Image 1: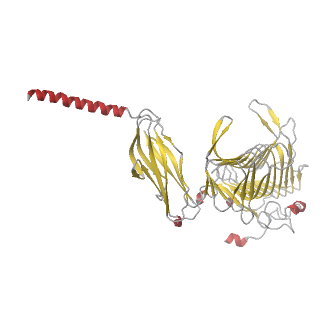
Image 2: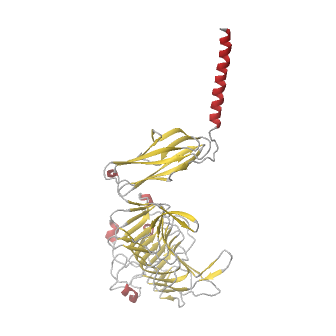
Image 3: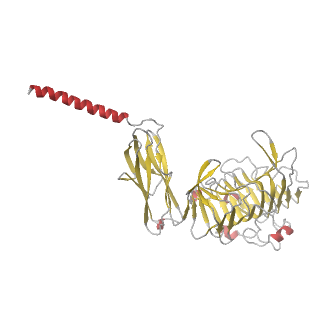
Length: 491
């Protein structure tokens, strides 16, 4: 008995020491640094299921521990989903909030996400977003949960291109492609149209751009937007709640790169991005790089139109409410705008830049000047106005280069002397009497100085305004012909 007792005590002691040591090693084996980061198989879990009845869908992702020690995730939760449509399952444990998840060294876990949506409850189309948050050592990492509330065509990065040595993930269009008006298009990420390819967008098409979305047209590629007055093409952000309906900066830009060509945009509404249209260099001014007709560009956080050494022709164009410029015509080029309205009453932040900038040079990083002639900048029967005292900025190289511009039967907001040959029948600082600038409504009211002051010779070639009202008997300045619309306002 005595011997057994003596042997029993050391045995218990050894077990206790072993347990303590083992547990201590396990604790020491957990990463506690606030710099610890998980890796994810995706940064967005996207649901593009057709929700025609009460519908649900499940998507999965993997969460990786790339370290040589364990990671303790104190909490995985869904946030921002007020109506509780999203649910998750973490290694077999379901819920909207999961606690104390461990990932072993160089290992991973699966997370399954599900969404259920009753489309009858909502005005479609709509989009639902939430965050899947991972709490690790007092830090938070997030993955987006995104569900579209109706049937849509999702355009997401599926290809990889090597550009200047860098791998670019994108959706590549490398053949002539047509987008129709049957379903909305949801663009997530970068769309690149390859050289020699044409993307045609048919009347009535709706394109919704996510915050990281842009469209790039490479050399010798073409963009054809073929909207009609009855069925315009709309390009806007992906958030369709009322709060976002006229909010700038929700997506990137449409970039027509160097030597892309023969672009046409007819009867379109392009709104709520960073730069609406970015038109890059051309090799020749024989044919326009871009033709704009009956098009609205508004609510851009930087500029509605950014053109560089390019050739742009526009008629019945309204560019309005941009954070910096409505139009930047830089590095020379050739431009012709008729019956257009450039109006800037941006009120989200203080704007210190004018509505229109004309420029014919740039200065490189070594301080060298490069001049590119402004062969032509013609504004006929147009309005350039805003809430600053000066809405036109000339930035021309003093050492040479052409700077040819003409304002012809145009209303200008400016402090400049408009008596020279560059100004023909200009109405200086005469308020056009826009209907409601806070609502981006630039129709002119009764008594506007624009009424009847346009050049009829210009109107002969553009006989209808942006809304389809004729200019047969009278030529008004701007994209809108005056007409009585009091009953429309009452509605």
